[in-house]
Length: 74
Figure 1 (tube, helix red, strand yellow):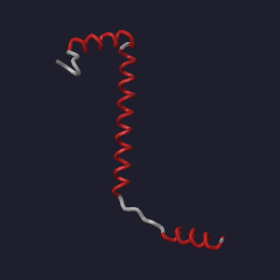
Figure 2: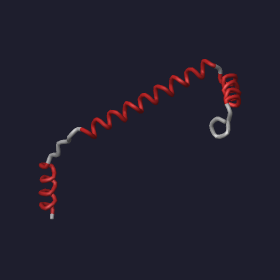
Figure 3: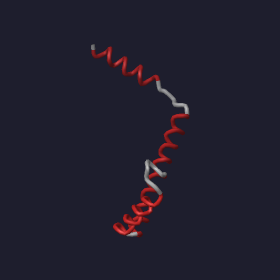
């Protein structure tokens, strides 16, 4: 018994039909594009986790400026 009741022979038949319909060159291109997209996604997740782990510098002067301009307008 395979995935969700699908056996190995059913998977092979489905893969053979897909290969006949799309052709092996197109499937190879789709596989390469999909692999590149997954790699880019993983790299972006890695970049985001690196940024989240680094300390950030908060500038308190901009908050003071916005508060002072708000009181001046009233």
